[in-house]
Length: 268
Image 1: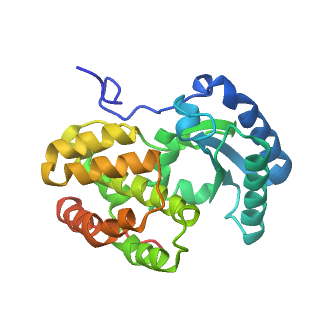
Image 2 (image 1 turned 180 degrees about the vertical axis):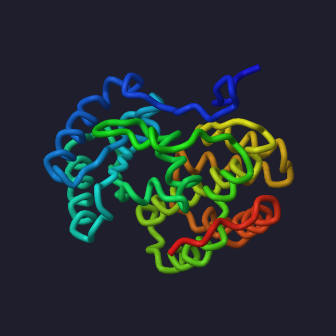
């Protein structure tokens, strides 16, 4: 039987490594590492890669560069502006990537009790150390249980009103709607997967596999979730794709999630 992303003790294995970075993306990662140090210097506690690049599944010209930076103090508006400038420069310089995104967090936030099964789990299991001391050393090991499901994706209902607003406000052009389609599709597929994750007893970051696993437990919604996984990889800017996310699949998923796992602890 495959290990389904778990070690011999049933804990989620950390995915990704620097050794898996495809050759085409190594110059991008090297530049990002150097510039993160230049920009944040002593403010930086640690830096991580996550997503398809450290998993070794990135596609040239299609995949984005995902960075998480843990600062010694809580990020400021100036830090966020620096991160946006860094992202824009990397995206402009390297044709290998389709955008760069830097997530800024504070060290204390990652290690807080409130974030232990959300941001803490994300760093410990889905992030690959790039610079500095690895915060995973201070975090527990994680099983694919209902607590993890609740604290990672048990807040979909909070997103839906804002998604409706973004759809209503968006320019109806393909260019404007494609990023929304990618973001919403990924969020829904991951939420659908974590809904059934404890029953499946495993972890995967492959969106296609996530949709298939979900569909085995919810056959009536399987086709919608498979379509969302396709859009997550190949986004299309079409309102006819987005509206069912907020009018049909999303509300159903939020209600079912709350019924099965409960609601995520409120954040400030």
